Image 1 (cartoon, one colour):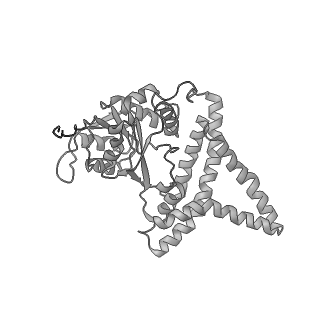
Image 2 (tube, helix red, strand yellow):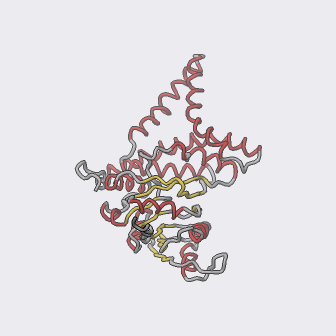
Image 3 (spheres, helix red, strand yellow):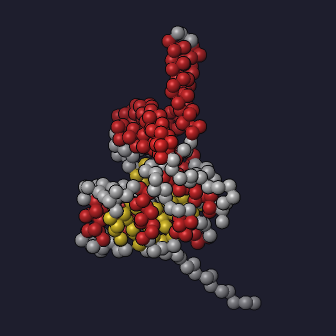
Length: 350
């Protein structure tokens, strides 16, 4: 009988965490502190500042120089800061990844609070041969409005189909070699750049392994105007990239034809029209209404009523913002004729 051999230890590859920031002086500490608390420490952290005007760069340099100390008294080790004024999100991420030395890249954003096992969870699948890993993100709100916005705009983990999920660059990891092969993040796009990157990465590596425990918590926008601007920019990015034309067409059809037609019939006392309007509103709010009770534990009874009242205006504002942004992006696309980013049929996973 052969003596039992000890299992070969897993040799873990170096992992670089990267982020790009702009005017995040009020939130950058939260990101760095959550990285310092990780069960697996990053081998390095590379942050690109895109020309902040609020002291973010000085704050980052103070962290890198050890002038700001961790709660236990030590310095945060391995932070590299790159100043790149004028860099958009894609260019900032590409600069950070290019400067990173690890073969594994874990991407996150400023303003998030990472779960203590985020880096461990998002890198573990690479030990089993994964080429890319998708983490997850949750709302980390304050108050009734932000709680309602989180319930309205973010899916719960139970709604996710891992075979189709497109990662957010708040929580994703991949091999630097694959980033190089697909040309990095598209620098001609200012928003929705991570969706284009995802689709090209998936075409090369296959669907990322889903790691829902790799959680990044972030605060939703603080008010309706900020949310509207965010969704306007997202939709403008969709238009620039030529993404989701059918989805946007259905939205225009609903708001410009179907809803006005039903309202006109309802005013003429057609009972089925009232049924259609009520049914349409219920369909629009079904998922937010299901999510909200799972997210409002910290709210008082009065704040819960406020959160419920915010759901309809949030949904309508988001839809109208998308309807305003998409044609602006399409017009930009027609004028500038950006590169054809879509993967070619013969260039499959490798």
